[in-house]
Structures are given as C-alpha cells and as structure tokens.
Amino acid sequence: MQDVLPEGGVIRKLWVGEADKYRDHVLRLDPESRHSRFGGGVSDDFIRSYVDLSISLDTVVHGFFLNSVMRGAAELRPLGVRLPHQAEAAISVEKPWQSHGVGSALLRRTLLTARNRGFRMLHMACLAENRRMQQLARKFDAELSFDFGSVVGEVESSRATPLSMMREMMADSHGFATAMLDLQSRMLRA
Ligand SMILES: CC(C)(COP(=O)(O)OP(=O)(O)OC[C@H]1O[C@@H](n2cnc3c(N)ncnc32)[C@H](O)[C@@H]1OP(=O)(O)O)[C@@H](O)C(=O)NCCC(=O)NCCS
Image 1 (tube, rainbow, N blue to C red):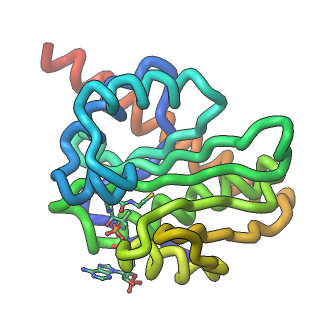
Image 2: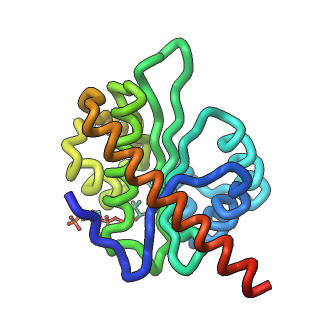
C-alpha cells in the first residue's frame, strides 16, 4: 500500500550519528503528545537520557523528515533474549503533522522491519484514553487487551519473505540517498 504523506515528507531509518535529530524531535512534542507518548509527564532531562539509552540498545528508529527536520518517529526495540520473537514499538508525531497519515506510514514501515527480523509479536503500550493510537493500531489488525488503565496492542506480524526483505532494502536505499542529498545540501549552505 502506498503511503500518503504531507508533501515533501520522507520516511527513512535513522543513521548512526543522528541521535540528536531524534532527541530534538521528542523534545519538541507538545505537553499532551509527550504525556501520551510516555504514559505521563516527563522532563527534558528524562527525554535526553531516554534517547541516549534507546539509541544504545538494539533499536531501529524510523523517522519522518520534512525539510531535513525529523517531525515523527517510530521505535522498534527487541525485548531481549528471554522473549526472542517479541519487540516493543512506540510512535510519536509532532502536533502540526498529526492526522496526516504520518503515524500510519511509520507503523507500516515498522511492521515491515519487525516482520523481516522475525518478530512475531509487537507490543504497543499506550494510555486507555489514547483513542487515536488505538484507532491506528486497529488499522493494522491489532488485538487489544485492557490492563490497569493502559492498553497493550499485540500485532501478530507475518513471516519474512524474499519480497518483504526486498521491500525493506528498497526503502532503505531510497532513505540513504535522501540522507546523502540532505547532507550535501547542508554542506553547500555552510
Ligand atoms: C498516535 C499518533 C502516533 C498517530 O499519528 P498520526 O500521524 O496522527 O496518525 P494518522 O494520521 O496516520 O491517523 C491514524 C488513525 O488515527 C485516527 N485519527 C486520526 N486523527 C484523529 C483524530 N483527530 N481523532 C481521532 N482519531 C484520529 C484515524 O483512524 C486514522 O486513520 P485513518 O486516517 O485511516 O482514518 C500521534 O497522534 C501522536 O504522536 N500522538 C502523541 C504520541 C502518542 O500518543 N504515541 C502513542 C503511544 S506509543
């Protein structure tokens, strides 16, 4: 399915050395979105530490970029050796770009990556009142079970196939080209 994104926007994986883009995006989230993303109010310092830790783990971050600025992110983090086929996902989109299909595109790309890494179960934790995230998860056939005011969406991801591997590789090569063009234009401007 084709992603419908705001004009000029691209989705690509974050490369090594781009943690600052991710951190700045999360710090820009408005209070309500920040609260929804982390399940409560968190400080700027918490976010800085969170991003440092997240990037140091085996996490795949997809970013939504517009004019070289990261305006949305989706994290995919394995739950570790004890739960080998399970991962956690979390999504954030800055307010002006919400409800424009960015969250759907980020989740679609994250599911493809999850599938190609052999994850069978994707956990998404969000607050019970976060209807938008639940709507979004439902679009991808999430099964939702309620637990102490939070909702955990469990998306059964299908198995990797040569085609799904190829789709991820093509998306990455396009993302790499975009990142290089971006770097080049910033160097020319400097
Ligand atoms: C939840 C979030 C990631 C969704 O991203 P988004 O870019 O707004 O999502 P989309 O535009 O792709 O919309 C996804 C679905 O949400 C629903 N939706 C969109 N806007 C909505 C609104 N204003 N009210 C209610 N539902 C809405 C729709 O069902 C939509 O699907 P459709 O367009 O096919 O009908 C984003 O709102 C966000 O970052 N919120 C703050 C952080 C957060 O809550 N993260 C989730 C916890 S991990």
